[in-house]
Image 1: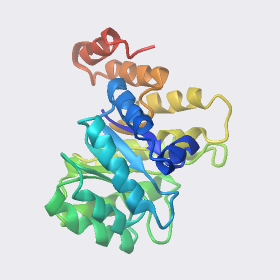
Image 2 (image 1 turned 45 degrees about the horizontal axis):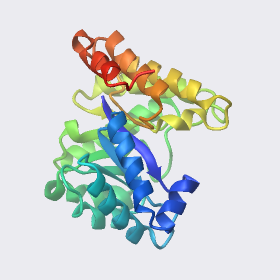
Image 3 (image 1 turned 90 degrees about the vertical axis):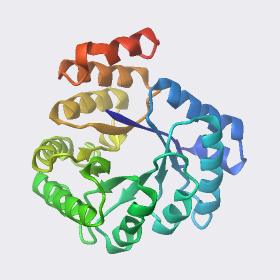
Length: 264
């Protein structure tokens, strides 16, 4: 399962402050902690700095790559910012994200042949953000079709069905679970991912809700997630769930994580 470490995101006030003050040591400690905890990619986001996102993201990528050999996930809603960042990435980049909106998909997918990235694709069009199961699967199919036409291998495509807070949409988790299962069956070779913590926004004891949804999603076929890997209980649930559904042969990854002190 591909784990995308979410902690270096300027929507978190302490991260935004560290970016503003160029606190290299703090940002690098965040990157190292996520690597140690089991992340496969480090997501970097400077989106709150409207008009200055590019320069802050350039700095973030530079110092994170000094601290870890893990590849970078470029997290930006601005196609021009993503384009500018791709040449800086060491290793195989990940783009977070494209949608079916022409301004995003038509700007980013042509870069596939040049940079060979992994791509997160949101089930969102110019007219709608998918909420029902049928909407999620329909838009997923359109994303698969468009991405394939540009030569993006399905193994590099990560469909995000869009997960909304249960506090605002009590059916969102169930719809997303059903959509994950259908997407994985209808489009063999594609991956699914999600911004996990959206599900618990506005609720008490959010981490419990996050863990519960993650385990349920893994049983439906989810094979990537944007999470905080330093949340040891969450990471433990992930590793345990993969073992239970036979996605971890002889439980070797679970055992290794236990021996390395990453489980709780």
